[in-house]
Image (cartoon, rainbow, N blue to C red):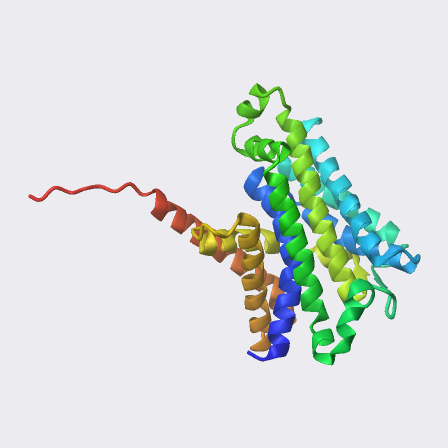
Length: 304
């Protein structure tokens, strides 16, 4: 595997890994199958493109994209908690609405480019890498890794706070949250806001990497993120020193490795979504298999 291929896997793996950490919150912590991810990812891309074209600082554009995604996630939570709409339908409604929102942000165009503009990959601290052409060529990997690491640390620290502990309890034991005079529905809304905020942030960073924003870029994102979380949990879940946020990112890197290698071997691009579905299916099957193996009771058969 050549160095260019490894660079491509890592830079995209770290960026999509941020989205996987967000889906870890909604899927693993809250047990909420959030389909609005397919809408909040391009929301982050479109919002970032519009902001950078308007002359906004790239880092500030990332923050605003996060807030936009968090707002969309909160809407999903409100539909589910306050209006009693099922979790799947809540996500579908938000995702459908965001399609129009993203088109409006892009001023009716399905794709917007902003080449030769300032991004987090060519301005600010990244300019320090210009001393070496080799180091500068790895700027996408370095910035992607730094962004994923910062998001991981922030998320890990949050999950240790009182609010984070209540969020984890809201997915496992809602009665416990209620016994502490806290509303589990409120914690669900907060969790969905955080998860979709991270998803939109990943979209923002990917947009600045490719210097474009496309409305249909979110298609299949929830499948990729869920597969990454499940692959990471299945393969690395037993390693105690690795936190779930870390396994989600590692799972995403492995997932991207499979896709990139398949393309390298000549798989047509038209089959890419099919491969994503197959990988997701394999991840689910393997996860169920290993779960059954762990939960299988040991029976001591007496000697006859």
